[in-house]
Image 1 (cartoon, protein in one colour):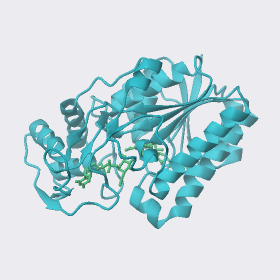
Image 2: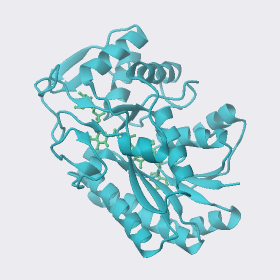
Image 3: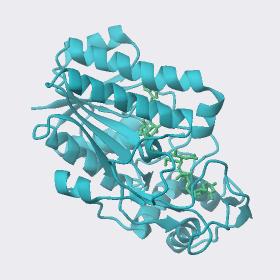
Image 4: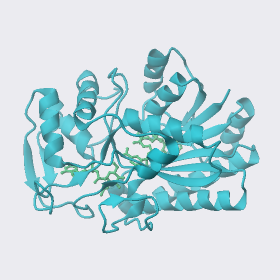
Length: 337
Ligand code: NAD
Ligand code: UD1
């Protein structure tokens, strides 16, 4: 029986992964410092799965705490979600991001090495590619992130690549997410931003539920079909199923491998708004604004490599993503509060 330590396990994606891994028969242990999540999610995980996995409130950079966890549980692998993720904040507070995301991950890896646990799946991001010029991103593209957040992801990828090069016992999957959205179909867990959302889907959801007055659409003059930005949105349930496949494949694939987790299809901001209006049966007022600095017109995942190597591909379309996102938001207008 495998026991997986899920760092960031009370966060948006980590909580969905917790349910997915429990349902697949894994034992799990959760670690989170609750810097961007609520302990209330633990009860929701228990309601959904009938299990209450051990939870440690603490930091991935706390080496004595990591020793305690490894000493109390036979951890066989790690799903590493813990990290700070707001791009604009990373520009304002770069040291906080490098300390939390990079130094924290290095401490986690040192604890793994010390306790002989060398299997890890890591939450990377499509943001590591930067602005490569092509719109379908392939895993072998050069990495050129354009902001501190993206650089923390590349640096952790570098640490993991170096560890695998130095010691052939390590097995690592670098999972490069495109744009995760949606929620568990039960509406019991979902994304619960603690401040005004930065990302499109939670912002639309907040407008739909009435906590924000209007959506600002950043740019309607891009060279795309309707002039608004195009991204590869992926249902969080598909995303965590990809983690399950990646974790299971570690036994077949030694070393360090990067996989895109996306659908391979783009949707524009206006298409997302239209799908949300259809799901929520209410208008989403919006205003066009200038382009957001740092945004690209269009990109999506090349999905062939992941499909071939992991036998996984996304199942859910944009309408299902917004329906589940809305179901969560309308049942929990204030998130977990
Ligand atoms: P989230 O903020 O909901 O979850 C991250 C969790 O990590 C939070 O619960 C937070 O409290 C915890 N955490 C942060 N620093 C920690 C630390 N030092 N020690 C212990 N816990 C800590 O974010 P999410 O959307 O679930 O993202 C999970 C991971 O996926 C992150 O690493 C993020 O960078 C990455 N990612 C997210 C997206 C996205 O759009 N959501 C896209 C690409 C990559
Ligand atoms: C952003 C991050 C990226 C991160 C990703 C995670 C930036 C510059 N990039 O990507 O590093 O990996 O989130 O999902 O922050 N939009 C609006 N109005 C809004 C919000 C967004 O029009 O209020 C538009 C954007 O211009 C973009 C699209 O919606 O065209 C998606 O934006 P967003 O959800 O923020 O994701 P990304 O910019 O793709």
